[in-house]
Length: 349
Image (cartoon, rainbow, N blue to C red; front, side, top):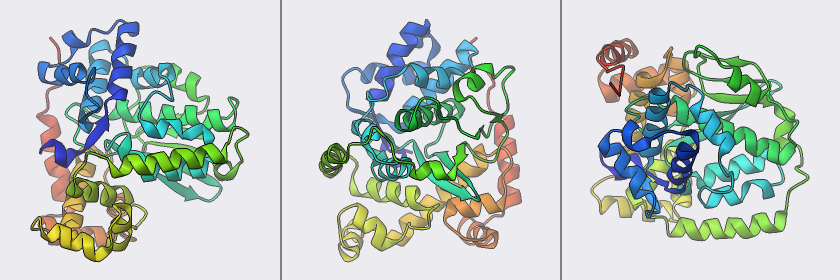
């Protein structure tokens, strides 16, 4: 799978992590496999890197240093406004709902490695982060880092005293998670069905005293300009916008066409010039989403898969697996267990 398939990420995140590693006493040259460290070096001058590179470097550094809280520590150390162009927007937004909506719209200008969704259940809201790229060594540290960044953004908007109801992580608990609890100041649930920050639904629409609507509008115009110059080609843009809108069931031709700045007819015509169609790309993205879900989920289930594929019920996900992947959920889970048992457990001797 080449970079155009996996997507791009702004190199600023890798630069910040490289600086953090020096402060933390981590020798990334020694820790990382040579082909991975090459991306650390490229980040010094490049503007864009493969989106999977930062995910892999974070995970390798965590394993090598035996620090299961490394992603949290990095995001607590980093400059919140020192990432790509979207990071300048957050503290000017009026509400958390507005900030998350704009982040979803322009997240590809930061990184195609993850997407976020807002789940509402009763009086609770949850900002869920989902890994969007293959992760050679696992993606737990990257997701912990992005959720910690979400925590800092929320406290920046609503006050440092703000606390979530709980933090949900879809991987096993480390030997100690005292640092996680000290940072988030709430219960931490491991082996959950998602990676999410759960909080009171009313917090979504609380007005931030720091908001600056004029500055937000100005920065949003700048983001729209940056979006028009995004280095991703049309196919990459369509893949990204389909993937990032699946769970909201908005991965349809009219909506995706509007996001890439074309009419539905023009988008189909441009895709036909590349010997493909919107429906074909939608199927490819759903296949990749299903593969990634079964590869990474601790306890896969059809209800969750249906949500991720943009369907309303589990039977639709089951039909998709049979019709488009010629298999069923049980067979995919068995394949995943077999592949996980063959993976190396150590990176460094």
